[in-house]
Length: 252
Ligand SMILES: [Zn+2]
Image (cartoon, rainbow, N blue to C red; front, side, top):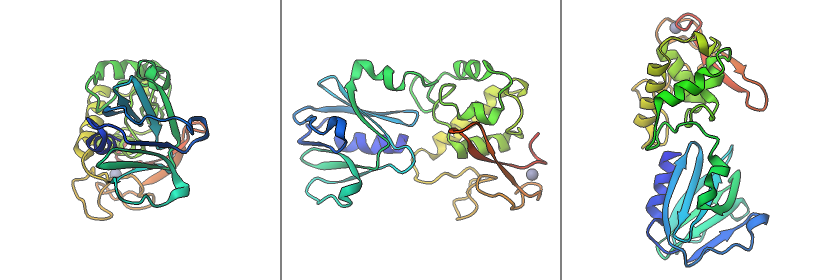
């Protein structure tokens, strides 16, 4: 999300919008042309594009969404999948199948994203506050707690599985029984930071196909450390249930 925000920021910030095309019913008549984009920031998985008129365009990719930045003169393809176009005289940012598209006053951003915990890649990253929030529900399995964006924002399913493997922590261990929660969160932050400028996610140090992760998406394959088959199972309550991966020998 950080990378997407940076791409949008690079294309839009400091330039006057010459076109805004909201293809969602609620904002179909909205028109931001003439406003200057001041920045695009990410907050967890939310993207916030702010203008000098005190307006924020809040988007979220959810499952299938994506943004593409193209030259302004280019004809946008994939019309029926487009939910939003923001353009200036040089660039157009085209949002496909976005799960959330809304306009709100910048001053009211907290109503959309304020429930989020500290952002691992944000300027105000606060590991102590993240740890406090994680420990507030000590019986909760650590794999679930790490994914709850109200505790801390930015850890996706891959980082969760990989961080727990690297720290030797079973995803089902109650978060109250995890020692070294601060270094665990610190490691997740470093993994995110190391990957923020590339499209894929690598935690092993190898970018070769099939070697990028320790346990994520490797169910049934031998653990890279001990050879025990990697296990997978759904974790969490619907609708937040996510498949997790772990080595039953290396993680306890
Ligand atoms: Zn192992």
